Amino acid sequence: MHSNLATDSAPEKPAHHDSWSIADTALHFEITTRALRFYEDKGLVKPHRLAGRRVFNIDDRARLEKILRAKRIGFSLEDIKQFLDITDGDVTDQEELLRRKTSFEAVITRLRNKRKDIEIIAKDMQDLCTIIDNYIENAPQDGKRGVFEFADAYDAKFRAHLDEDFIPV
Figure: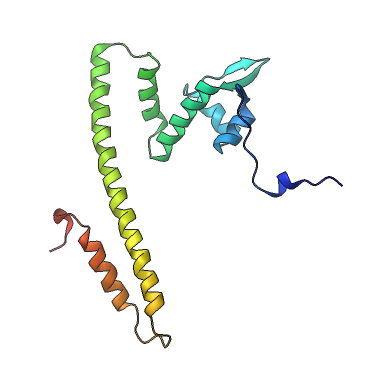
């Protein structure tokens, strides 16, 4: 008897080869074929055609990975297009290049600040997980100790990571 285990679990990603269909590409990146067609309509991806079908090569996949990474951190498709227009060589006017460079430098600064914020929040959350573990491990079973000590411990950890500018007076 034939077992159909593949349908019982998560779909397998296609094996590496030189080109992928739209369905294989969508499966690999865990997006829909509709999304890929939309990105193509917006000029973000430009797959080759083979017998009328979209074929994605290694460069297309690398480009799509950049697009999806930028989307995950909050860039709009228009923001992404601004970047890709330059890397594709579609923008050559010096004034426009300098304008976009200035804009990109501002984005770089915001991204670095966001990274710092993420690291601080991740550390705070890790500290909170430790506090929760300690609270659960040491909490009396009669429930008389309440959450106030827990809240005070969290507040102390949180304030330890605040910048001076953000500490309420």
